[in-house]
Length: 225
Ligand code: DC
Picture 1 (spheres, rainbow, N blue to C red):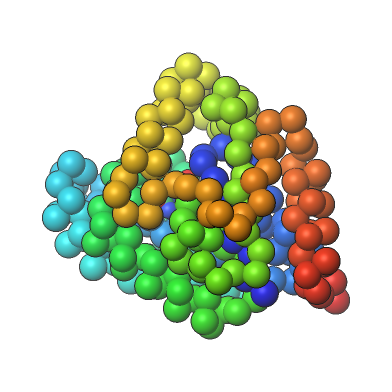
Picture 2: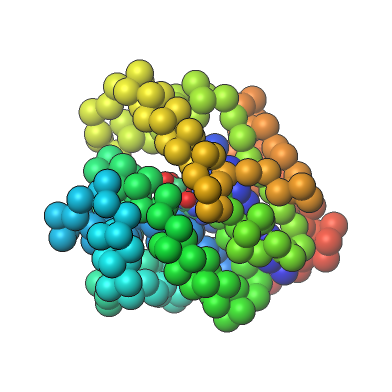
């Protein structure tokens, strides 16, 4: 069973997807981490983020794999485990430039589809998983929340990690990225017609997880052994 979970930043997608995968005994694919890894490589090579050709060139130099033995799987960038480096503000910004380059999206989509073939029992999260990457997925969800609530969640998350952050700056960043994500020509953030839209603004993470697990079990997903 493939379950796709799409939606904008700050909807709790990552945590929800990980918990759902764990409860159902499915593998978990974080596709944002793949764009982030290319962003990290672009920073390391001091690339001009405004130059799509340079970014596409760098993306082709990136060998992106996952160590599936770890939970959640650790991303290996040319053999180096980098998951712990991917959530900084700098990498987040670079990834949003990387994700609008059509040639890079094509590369990532092909790799994600290959992962789907190798891991046919999968919870995959991103922006285009139900619409472009796995249009035939058994279950599709689109998580959403108001930009203000998403900004509050991000601020809480970053402060817990000890980062000094400003709510208004985070809110502005979320709105800018939403705009970039939903207006790009290839794989824009959109609600697949056959996805269930879940407004998480007033829901706890546990409620969102339970809803998805319930739907998956109704479709015959196995219980964790
Ligand atoms: O979900 P995230 O914040 O880790 O995603 C990082 C960036 O990659 C963000 O700008 C959205 C983009 N992205 C995308 O365009 N398509 C995906 N399937 C996943 C992420």
